[in-house]
Length: 302
Image 1 (cartoon, helix red, strand yellow):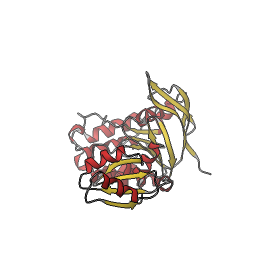
Image 2 (cartoon, helix red, strand yellow):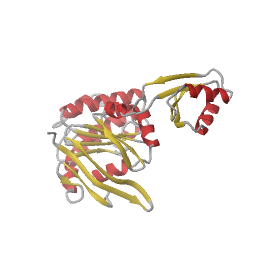
Image 3 (tube, rainbow, N blue to C red):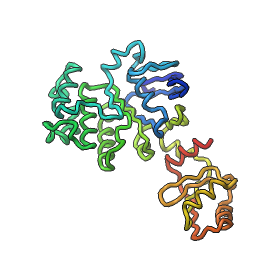
Image 4 (cartoon, helix red, strand yellow):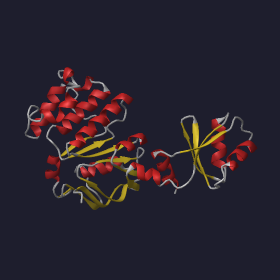
């Protein structure tokens, strides 16, 4: 049986009349790479701040490595590494100075834990005398990860770490997370990018402060319980309006050059007939295999 690293029970938090997270319960196994996938405002940052002992919940409880997130906050802060969504290192300090500062706070040194961050640090070491504020987005990201790792945390908490960085840096970052996971560190990461869900061991799809589904990406996709169609015509904007008004439409949303569509009627011939009745031309309809974003949209519609 897997050892539980993080346990959350009936956790809620409000800001005035706004519910940020609503009665959340879940468990994350030790050594797992677990993703919270959802759009801005879904509640990811509030949840992470509670887990990192930076916010108090209104109701419910959370524990990390058997330490209570409220009562044992000092112990938790020694065993976690936290990388907030906004770059929060000292911008006027150099790369090397930032790392030395964070190592000193935790009673260690860069040299002592160099092996832990070596694969990441060697990419920014040529710029070790440059001020952190003058680094590129991808380099800032790597430095922030090094600072979060310098004290050998048991749990790594990453809040939207790839937001605003280029596609190459995003790919490199997830490769780094995979290597860190192999060392036994429990990693929880939030992201608005649905394609990153497939890189996690398990994911929780979160929207409006509620978890809609928790499972492996493959299992979530396999639960897609209806036919999915990619549809294109000569006028995509008008087609979008027409499909939104159609009484047979369940979900309809733009996805690249197509609209992804699910319908109440199981006969896809009705799609073409309806679009022709609305004077659409060059109609293209094909049944496709859903991805994690389609599964998310399907769950939102229920």
